[in-house]
Image 1 (cartoon, rainbow, N blue to C red):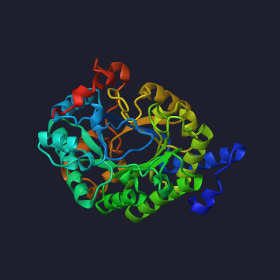
Image 2: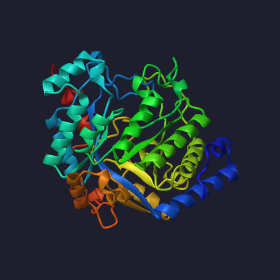
Image 3: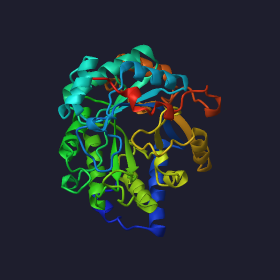
Image 4: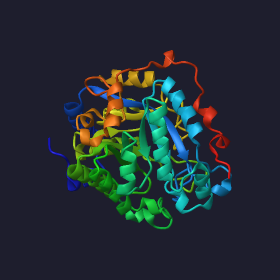
Length: 399
C-alpha cells in the first residue's frame, strides 16, 4: 500500500463522516499488516530532572523560573529513590525529562549544577544515567531536547534510547503572540538538526507532533512528512507520538481551543498513512479517554505508563490503569503487551545500542523482543504514590 504524499494529505483536511471512516480503516489495515494484533506500552518511571528551561512555550506549566521559588534540579539520591520504587513496581524504563539548557539562561541553574559538580545539564544527565545503570536494572530513555553530535555520543554510551518532540515545522509559531515565541530551542531547523544528529549516530529515537497549538493542517502534514523523510534517510525513528494540545490554567494559552476528537482521529489516520509502516504510531492514553476510537484510527502503541509517578508535563491528566487499558484493547480485538524502551526491530541491529546496554535489554526481553514479564496492578506492593513526590522542596538543590 503506497504511503500518502504531502499533496494527497493536504486534501484530507475536511474529510469526515463515511470518508473519514474509510480513511481510518485504511490506516488500520496498514497497522495490522505490519504490527499484527498487538498494541504495546512501556512500563516506566518518570524523572523530571530539572523544571528549569530557557524556552517559554505558551502552553507549558512544567517549567519554573528561578524567581518563583519552585525551580529545581533533582539530586542523585532523589532520583535513585524514585527509580528504585519504579523497579519494585516492575518498571523497566526510566524516562529522564528536563527543560532545555537552563544553565545558558539562569545563573541559579549554573549554581545548582556547580553544587552537584557539573557545568552542563547534559553532563549531569550522563552521570544520572550511569547511576541508574549501576544501581538498578532499569534502562534510561533520555528526553533532553536539542543536542549536537558530541552530546548524543556521550548519552548513547549510557542510555538505551532518546527522543525529542519535533512538535511542528511551522516557523510562523515563533512569531510574537504564537506558541513558540521566545523559544530558541523550538526553531524547526534546530530541532530537525537534532533529529539528523541522532540518525547519523544511529540512536533509537522517538519524536512526534503536538496537535492544536496554532499550526495549520498543511503545517501538520509537513511535520509528519519531514519526520518520514528523516527516517527514510537514517532509519532511526522508532516511534512517532501524535499528542493533542491540552489547555492549562495559568498559561497564555489557557483559553486556546483544544483539538476536537474528529481532528485527532483524522490526524492519527493520516499520520499512519504518511509514515513508513515500520515506525510505531503512538498516542498518549492519559490525554484522552477514547481508547477504542484511537485504536480504530491506526495506532499501535500507548507509550509510557507509570504505576508510581505522574505525567509531570500534563499533571492534571492521570495515567489510566493498565488493566483498564488492556480491557479496552482486548475489546477491539487486540492484545496489550509490554515492550521495552528499544523496539524489537532495533534489538537485531547492534549498531543502535552499546554492548552493555544491549546486554541489559536482553535480560528483560522475550524471544520476540517484547518485555519478558508483565505485572498486574493489583499484585503490586504498596508504594508511594506520585503525589507524594510532588513537593518542590524534595527536588531543590540548595544554593
